[in-house]
Amino acid sequence: MSTAHEPLLKVEKLNKSYGRGMSTKNRVQILHDVSFELRRGQTLGLVGESGSGKSTTASCVMGLTGADSGLIEFDGVDLTKLKKAEMRRMRRRIQMVFQDPNGSLDPRFTVADLVEEPLIIHGASDSAERSRRVEEVLDRVGITVKQAQRYPFAFSGGQRQRIAIARALVLKPDLVVLDEPVSALDVSIQAQVLNLLSDLQDELGLTYLFIVHDLAVARLMSHDIAVMNGGRIVEAGTSTEVFENTSHPYTRALLDAVPGARRRAKALAAAGDGPSQEGL
Image (cartoon, rainbow, N blue to C red; front, side):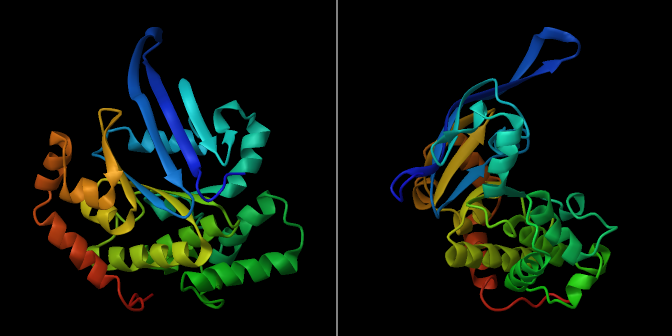
């Protein structure tokens, strides 16, 4: 077990390539010696454009994609050395929230059933305790017991993402990988969901690996930021250092590509204050 002063997640010299066609010689290198550390209770924003390698990095951390080489150490355990059954048990402590909640919310099941499912998969046999846990986590994200008897299609996009967050949190994970969790939402709803994620982190002591292309969102949410380009981390530091004292041309280009990015970060923070105004 790591202490409060040690990183919960440590990635060192992570490499990943994919084959092109049938030949094993024609491989495309996606990740090049990616290294970073994420401290317990903190958020690391992994920032970059589409194709930069940030989602592949997240997939490797989750064990959904095997790395070619490198270290992925979670709470002192090298995840790259685990067998499938061991990784499945470890995944109880590492959960993921995807960009599109529709991909993880089966429309055939009620919200209560969807949130309960991870508990059943991981062997929670007490049905009363499962129900209590489902009610508790849904209440944390602003979904009532009555609403939980409905199906996903009855909810707005922002509410479906809240349900996906509840599904990820029901197992009480230590690390949550957030893969562009608000990019499909409009700005006002983005702020509400980001505010919720921030509150949950404070209340539950969660650690976030936040995959995002928007530097304004990264600034709002992250203690530290790592900027990826071409499968490499080209700049890293605290949120303030990266945002205010940009040193790499690619990071400056990302800022320049979003007019008013600094003002947008402040606007998101202001819009995130107060209770949700979402309706069904």
